[in-house]
Image (cartoon, rainbow, N blue to C red; front, side, top):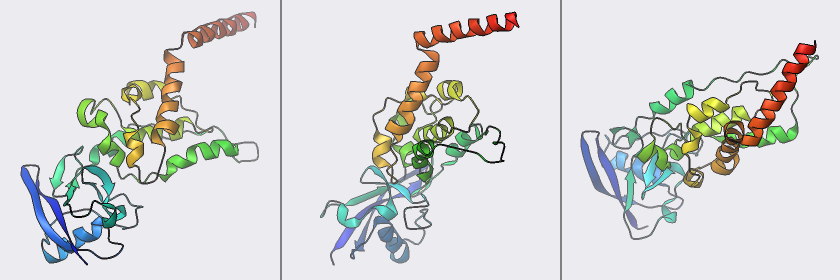
Length: 254
């Protein structure tokens, strides 16, 4: 079969450039296969992360023709024929070498999220949840932490790198905030510490998610609505004020 021309970034944070490679193409080939061919025949020192080659570990994240993608799930025949295929590291994260970036910032964000705190068990020692509540958050558990959504988020890339936790952690916060057994009130932290207000719902994170999680519609927008209702809705303020006064009156009577 015909060869494909790949332009692969080679270098470190101190500098680098795209380097040309010719790779034979076979049926069903993915970009990660091409990278492995380059390592085997042309550049054994080419650094890249990968593990499962099945789209489930999230290790082989890169930018293919400028789009954040999993290399193991990007088929060569899905890319424009007759044009070079440009493979670069994720731009959002500090470069280590070649296609490998330092994603440790994400784990630091994760440490700041308070853990799940369930309510007490029922009298029979079990927990009970409605099926609709289970299904609502089930989608979020599909996340493989490839961090493609973090990479493509222009808020993280260009504006609020430290104030906004990013789409991946909006998913985790939504998983906890919408869990019917969780007793933590996380809304102030979602607003102040994790910066949900900075997201302008362009849905670029949803577009690159390899697990087809509806990050914007099902996680971020509901979190925004909850925060708005808690902190910015004057009717909600009034209701809490009235409810608080009634509670005080009842306590005075007793």
